[in-house]
Amino acid sequence: MKEIDPAKKKEYVQTKRQNEARKRQERRAEIEEGRMDERRLAFLVNIYKSLGYTQETFAKKCGISPQLVSWYVSVTDDCNLSRLEQMLAGIGYEVKVELKGPARKPINETGVSNGVRYTVQGVFAESGVTPTLTEYISNCGPGNRMYFLKEFILSRKMRLIDFAKKCDVDPTCIRYYFIKDDIKVSMIYKIAQANNAEIMWTVNPKTEG
Image (cartoon, rainbow, N blue to C red; front, side, top):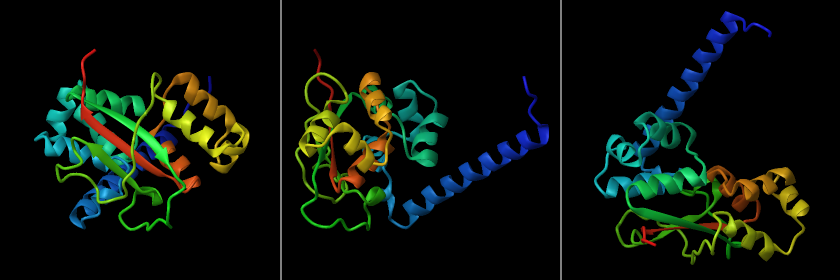
């Protein structure tokens, strides 16, 4: 096994820490400048804050570390859809997602995450924490987590290979998402952006049974 050069390892760790610190600083600047809703996970932060949670108490309720929540919302601005479901379930809510489009008019990128419009409905639609963005009906569909993407691909009336090419994604990755029944939030935004579509998150109290 090839040994890792200690100097290179140290340089890698330092660079990683610098990048993380820079991203956290960028997130703080977004809040100070009122650009919070440009983040992909802005709605998650808005929701737990509106319910009176701090990042630490929210993490405890979800059964994960505050550092991991910080990693998702303050560094990568990303997580798996399954993790998003887990975190919201930890505070008694469930989330559904749907892609709709193409958009009825060109997307104004100001205040829109990754150039993609999104909105949140459900119990939070009237709570004052919802981003002021477009209205779309959301329904993740029956059964699997990835049903929403299946519906969207079918609505495009494209072969899977052509759809993947348009999204600049390897077709095997698309298949993997369905096999694993999971996908990263950032990939949902990438697919929406490639198709001039819009994202709808629906968050409501978790129902029993």
